[in-house]
Image (cartoon, rainbow, N blue to C red; front, side, top):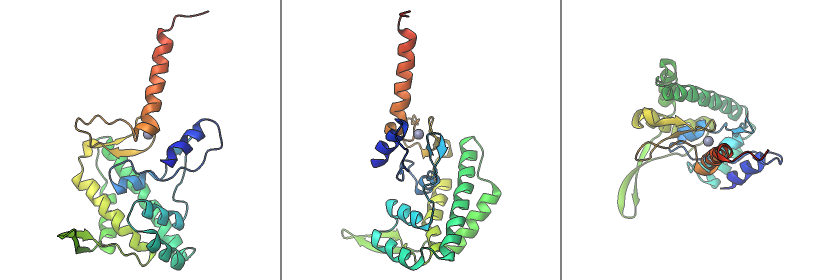
Length: 218
Ligand SMILES: [Zn+2]
């Protein structure tokens, strides 16, 4: 993953670069919340305009480059795209608050649920039946024509997150701000990713232990 080397470079003292998007959480709505990570202790906004939102949707495999390019050509730099982008970031912060609340033993607020229900009613995600390798499957149809259409798959993922996932397994990484759903057998996941935070934490622990055990030389 390119982001790993970029984040590592940032830590080693070169100019920090904006990391790529991370998909480590196990749910797209949670990955969406993770689009404001920390870099050198500072929050970094990865969705800094509507074009970045389109890039995230492509990276999240909600739509392909060609479809994204079509939407970008038609809508980028419009007031509608700008308004949608602001609403989307506001939704992300509401989701973050709900997730933090769940992680500390609480629940999503009534206000959050009202917002989600209003948006779900306004932006439904239609189902369709498609043949895949000779088997008929039910899939969601996502064919965005205008910026607010992009709410639909995120809301669907958020609804899944709040209803189908075990809230006791929603967790924040022990070393950074990223959230994830722990799908391990024994619920022992501690980090957003072993490469990003796990190895670093283990290395720090090893150094600390080694220092403690080493005889003093002076
Ligand atoms: Zn982490």
